[in-house]
Length: 366
Image 1: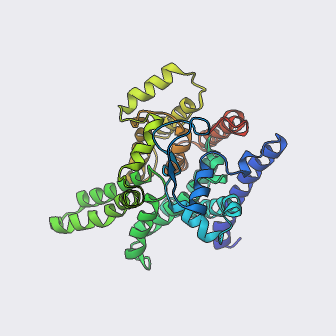
Image 2: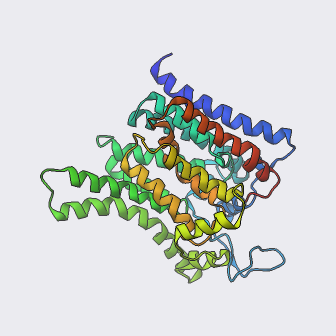
Image 3: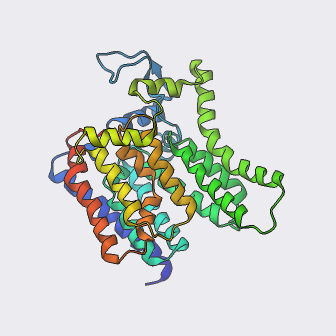
């Protein structure tokens, strides 16, 4: 097999098995939620079709009830992509495009990991990505497949310093990422950690003004996304902090992440999906500690792991952690035996098929 074909066909085959498995399980169980714009997906669709809307909460139709209801709690990059790429047929695009981006994302993820480490790591890492307990959300109208493509493209241009158009595409991709999801700005720790490591290793230190200039170049686009969205909300709804005000009804407030984790683990059973998610990703650090992954990617996984509980709530953490793409890389690049890596892949898939996905199909995993 030609090398170029191999680099496409292997991740494409993994995605085909992954998508086919969940589609078959869905149809056998008579559930169609995987193929419908349910829960938050409906908000992404409404933004793509009508733009942002805010209204007083009506207890008869809204849950949870608060001071603000509507679709202003969701970020715009995915709806904009939906509207453009579906040629206005958003109701069709929101069902089809996740599979398109999912396929592209798996191919990009595999080839990124192959470039960073080797073929074996790319294979196991991509399998680990597909077997995460909540990986089926890649196939829904949520933006996770879309963000996976952006993430892989960003890392490609970050590491390939001679790539054509890098100086323009790198900040554009960072801005797109920060406009795609509330916690996506955390990815700014990747170029920050990389820059600090490179500075530490340099024998001749560059001038401070050069260091500051480079840091601003990498970090400003990640901060700019939420700021631009807040500015739009100020101009449209006279509320610069509307994103935060909208989230108040979800009882999110800053807290100590380990305290929040401990309360969840001691209050609810370990098989509670949020607790199972905490334990699954925590085990990745414990079991695959000796990995060959870049420090900046590990730093992002650790920051993302702590950030969600630091908001004071564990609600939907199984989706939030899906953005921790390098966690799958940690499995693929470990020094553990192949059977341990495959066993962990099997563990994630077992959690998905026996616990997470049945709850999703029953309509109780939002």
